[in-house]
View 1: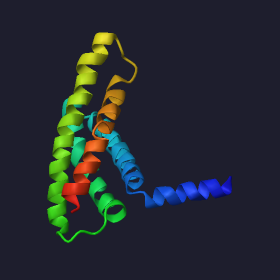
View 2 (view 1 turned 90 degrees about the vertical axis):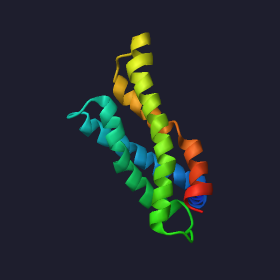
View 3 (view 1 turned 90 degrees about the horizontal axis):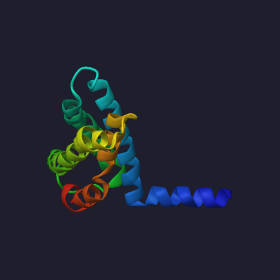
Length: 140
């Protein structure tokens, strides 16, 4: 049992995609938590967009440190490309989040934490496309 756990931990630490998922999961949690706080002051649609740069910066720093090898390009160039990839992801996150919270959930009568669930689903939606884009474009 211990050997299996140790080999599982070793596999996660060596798998780039697994590390990407862990960093992305932490960034998603930061994104959702930031949005919840911002929603106390602004409407949901604005809060979703404003939580983006907070999570983006965290995700960039952690991805650069833990997920992708050091590239020859500058950190600022990587950050700009990271921003571009995540700007596309933001559009997807916003459309999924707002679409669920303001259209689909009301249509089906879903009221249980509708904004929280909608935003969480939205934040998770671009994981595969973002990984590939960062692998071939951001951290090249």
